[in-house]
Image 1 (cartoon, rainbow, N blue to C red):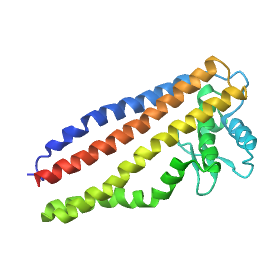
Image 2 (cartoon, rainbow, N blue to C red):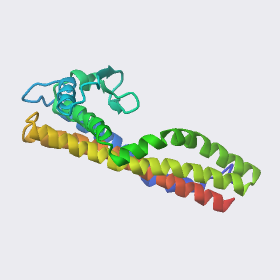
Image 3 (cartoon, one colour):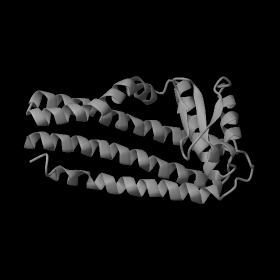
Image 4 (tube, rainbow, N blue to C red):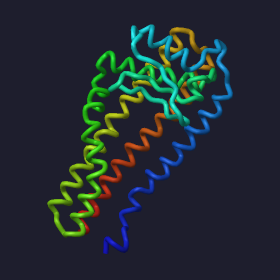
Amino acid sequence: MFLFYDWTFIILIPALVISAWAQMKVSSTFNKYSRVSSINGYTGAQVARMLLDAEGLYDVPVEEIHGKLTDHYDPRNRVMRLSRDVYYGTSVASIGVAAHETGHAIQHQRHYAPLQIRSSIVPVVNFSSNASWLIFLLGMFMGSSYLINIGIFLFTAVVIFQLVTLPVEFNASSRALNVLEQRNVLYGDEVRGAKAVLSAAAMTYVAAALTAILQLVRLIALSRDE
C-alpha cells in the first residue's frame, strides 16, 4: 500500500505552506529594504569589516560569493562570505544581513554553545540526512523494523540540528541589531528596517525546523502502517 498511496503526506502540508510563505516573506522584505539606502552610505562589506575589527577579528576575511542571499560565515575556515548584493550594497537590507553574519563570527569567537553544538554535529547530519531515508525505505521494502528504526533514529539528528539552529540564528540577529544601533551604523527607521529583514529571514529557519519535525512524525506514522 505504501508504494501506491502515502496518506502521511498530509502531515507535511502545514510545513509546506509556512515554508512557502517564509520564502516569499524574506524575498519581498529583502527587496523592499534593498531600495532603502542607509544615511551613512556604508556597503555591507564595509560594515562587516568594521564590526569584525571592532571585535578584534582582524584575521577573518570578508569575501564576495555568487548567488542571492547566499551570505554565510564559515566557522571551519573562519571566512565571511557575502553575496554581491550585500557585499556592494549600501541599503538597510544589505547592512542588516552583513551584520547578522558578523554576529555568527562573534558567536564563534566567544564560543557560543549552540553554535559549537551545531558545528560539531554537521558531519553526522550530512550523513544522516542522506542515509536516513534510504535505510528507512529499504526497511519498508524488506519489512525490516530494525532498518526502519535505524532510519528514524538517523533522521532525529536532522531534527536536532534544525532545533539547535534556531537559537544560533536568533542570537546572531540580536547581536547584529544591537551593534548596528550602538555604533550608529543605522538610525531609527533604518534599524527597524534591518530588524524586519532579519525577522523575515528567521522565519525560514522556523519553517525548516517545523518541516524536519513533521517529517519525523511522518516517518513514525509510516512505520506504524508497515
